[in-house]
View 1 (cartoon, rainbow, N blue to C red):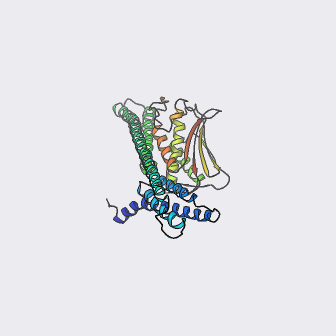
View 2: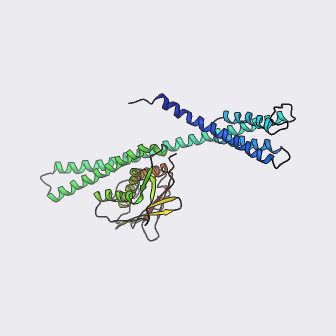
View 3: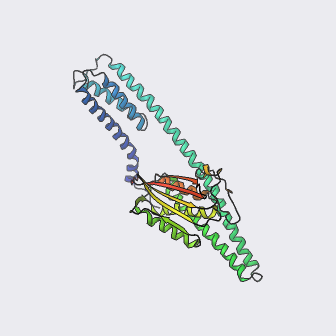
Length: 362
């Protein structure tokens, strides 16, 4: 395995520092410009320290740690003293109230920096706890989803081997078909696991390119029909060309998961409709079916990782939906999109997700 170069490490380590320095210098420069403009119209300069205090609050809020806010306090004090206090462009530390101004700015900086640092630390702890919970739920779901088809494969294969001479051709064909179906399900589980590792829980930047929405949907439908050719899927896309910034492989995986979920848990569905619509700033993809809909008790928990493992299990549809939906939500979040599910008034379920049309890789 290749080790990262020192240059790459330095670049990664310097990015937060560069961002903090740019924020500090940018806010102070903008504050100085505002004060210079106001100086042309206001006869007093009492507002200048207050504006710089506000700048320090902003810097403390959007930078990491204490040092940038404290450094901004010193720079602000010298700016107020030298640039906006008579005699101008000269340092005069004997000005009345100058020590008090310095003490106020420094105190505000320390308090704001302490509060923001504490809030960021709490948010990081909460985020880690959520990831650990999601990881535990995914492992629990994966173990269930893998064990179920493996048990079926082993059972069907054993039935063929142990009773080969007693089974007629139709029975052998049925058992072999069951093995193929379960193997296809295992393959989709592996694809989901690979997808979830690619995006690392949504925290890693993904490579997006402008893709034709119609082509991505069409590719997903074609793959679905390879293992479920009997279920019709209707596609409704806009008349105009719709280019969407995305990772096409990951979004195709989302569509496949949603279509499979409709088939496995919708029961007795006769058709599926995929709608693609264009709203201001977003492309919206929805997968609709005419099945039994989603249990109202399950609906609020479909994407939060707490879905029961055996919800809506039937003899013909015994697979769990949790890992597929967790993968879908992680992929959509990695694209800075949103996902929701609902029951259609006319019957059946609708799951939709939106992707921003602005290609932001940050």
